[in-house]
Figure 1 (cartoon, chains in turn orange, purple):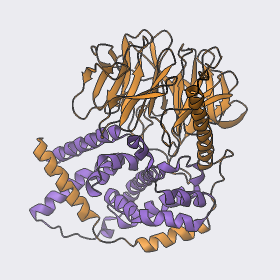
Figure 2 (cartoon, helix red, strand yellow):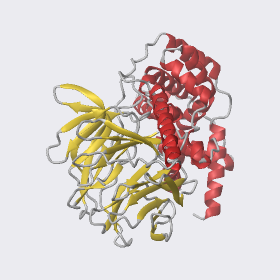
Figure 3 (tube, one colour):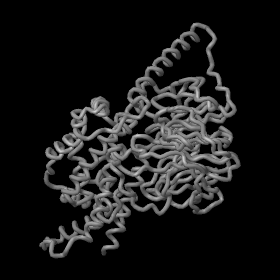
Figure 4 (cartoon, chains in turn red, yellow):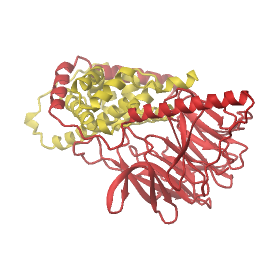
Length: 383
Length: 185
């Protein structure tokens, strides 16, 4: 079909749909019916934690405080006082870092204590980054937020835009293990850029309509795994863009898109957050008054050497409708543990619990770290 | 900075206040949230279900489910995406019920229809028949793009997905429509 024919098909479809929906539906009567029924229908109780808007206000207050403290710090520096450098959080693995609402918090994986709150050079931003990747030394962080991929230096407090993402495609970012490059997925392209945004190199330019998302470097820096939202498969390519191939079978339409690809420590498997019904998903059973049946959230893995195999379940880590909440997942830099921000984590002998959990990769023992609401979770390399 | 700050304009400031009040059980606030969204939701449901009665049921169930589960909405900025997801699910349920119901219809209950045999009508009927063979997700994104005439960014916002994903899903939906049309020929 030519471009002209496609345009014509779009126009004819629009006209046909307008014809189907022509005539005013009686929305006034419907509105009355909805509100009257709502008046006699009980809402489900709120979760036990503060509501997000309240949390947001709390966060903004903390951010404002941090900003004020930062300003005082800068003023002190200008006055010739020694500048206080951020100190790394002491732990075996380095801190888990949750991003949201224009800042981040470092969480000690040992005790769940939030060690510090920092801005990202983005004042008054109430959005979370869609993808985050740390430099190997933990000094800088690359993230994608809306139409830009940027690098923030947490010591120099500088922000550099490394890639404009087109209006129709978000970006994914992944810092190479040697720290020299950042892989950026944008639309159907996988590119490498230097951390200052220079020397862009196209690794892969997929055909129109295909997209590449969520790049993740192998521990040895030889390969890049990514999610193909069009084919709904996990793929892997060599770091020079060659040998681009599908690793998993396609995920069924309507299931949770894999989140936050990572690698096992030995580089033999790709690990990610997905949902049940990976394949052959039939229609969901009618929900009992709920908008939809909740997805069972699973840590899944697939061997890198595979060519089109179904992922295997590593662990079940929750259960959510994922309508107002998006789970987040990350693998520790040494591959020894996972962190997941989830709803309904199954707890043996107790009620399921929401929040941030750390899971030992070998024993699958889970520990609760706290409730960090809707946040993108990453694991900072230990400086 | 300006580039970033415009990202979170998903829901009007007034709507956030209404959402807070509705979460506290205020039906008037909920009514104010529903009113501007009702006609749009009905258009979506009518386009997908091709039935005024089924569409009204799906829309009513969607908003009532939203009312009951409002406490589970953790990010007010995603309210519209949350509603659209719920509406798609209600439409899926309606289509499943319809499949079951079809088996119960006796032929004598079916009124004869006088088809409009003009070329334009036949072509439109073929196009809508192909559209009705698509998944609800495909129909939903095609309606947002072509009936509502929304730009891709707004389609993405309404579905709560990245713009890149919306673009690829739109492409896939159109390909599915082309294939459905080809199999009819």
